[in-house]
Image (cartoon, rainbow, N blue to C red):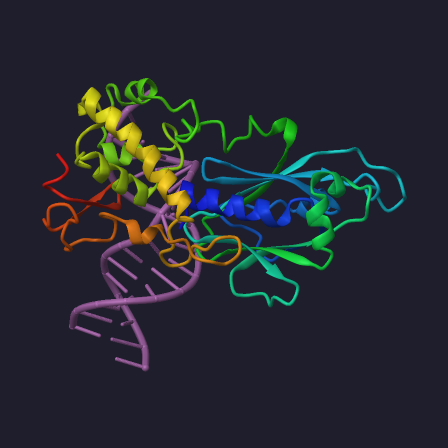
Length: 309
DNA sequence: AAGGTTACCTGCCCGC
DNA sequence: TGCGGGCAGGTAACCT
């Protein structure tokens, strides 16, 4: 499902609901998704408190802090303090949802974290005192992924920025670093079509198959143009429309097609604002020309041949 | 090095 | 009703 707006939506939902909670059990039902789930996940995050949740490209980062009161091994020796960071990617079909304690495990639920509030004076109290008081009962964080293209792995704060998954990532389109000048530099001498160029995470992160088509429509740019063929005017318009499209989608809570849902299980509704995605054979909202579908790099692209040149 | 293709995996929908 | 083919929101490992 998830492109930048959907991942951002999930992160915001999680931040509202599980900050300050303590990991009280870790259940892993799959050995491997896109890659192996760390065998020591349980050992590394049990009795840790969730201190921060953020999005990086299409990854969800859940920061944890050791609860020093509980951080001892079986012999009663105090363990080294660590700041683990859980890295989660939803792949095509992944969902990360919050459930209550009565939840029954469903097919393709691969990891379930049980979360609880903590006593006064712990790190949870400092992170989120209000949530701590209102979440004394158990909460579940459930990762479900039918196609198993997702990722669940673990690093720690010191190694986060150099992590293998983040080394080759391009510009964050909603950050200040995303400027017209940088976009222009990326497109220079690049002879691939603009649609697949937008989806290349080593150049710009977060734009997937839906928002590439939508941003190009809003910019009036045909998906088969090469990136290097764009004029300065095209690039300025595209830069603006990438940002606006992603922001509109975040405001709508993302897009729900088959299986995306927000952390609370609700659907997003940006799909009702699609101008071209999934609209093959239907009339363009602007000019009534029928929307076309072509395949580029093995993925469907949708466009209006009259509005996009 | 850029650009293209293929594989990973399950589910669903369509036509025969 | 069953079966095969095509398609699905992503990424990375290969090849040329």
